[in-house]
Image (cartoon, rainbow, N blue to C red; front, side):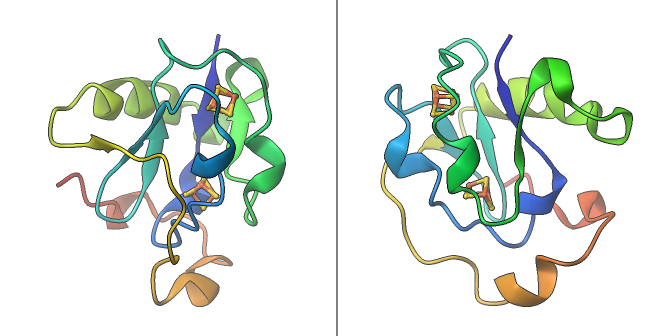
Length: 110
Ligand code: SF4
Ligand code: F3S
């Protein structure tokens, strides 16, 4: 089991989560982050850091977000997605996108 980054991160990418992770197991794409499930130790520290509640435990993920389990696994092993350990500024339109649902089509893989 592991924690999973879900849809609300897309186009926001606050990155508050990465600075608290003891395993440095977040990986960054252009407008989304993922967690490597093989590196995550289930500490849950990152959950409360995300302003848009994007991080959930795999066993508690809602059915409409279940596809993000595989997305996190696949993209965290994509060599084009790089490990990120330090927080930085969120994406410019983060406030507007924070309230939007059904954003998967906006996710840029590279
Ligand atoms: Fe990192 Fe812990 Fe969050 Fe897993 S649950 S991504 S180890 S902070
Ligand atoms: Fe994304 Fe939330 Fe982290 S928006 S980058 S999961 S703090």
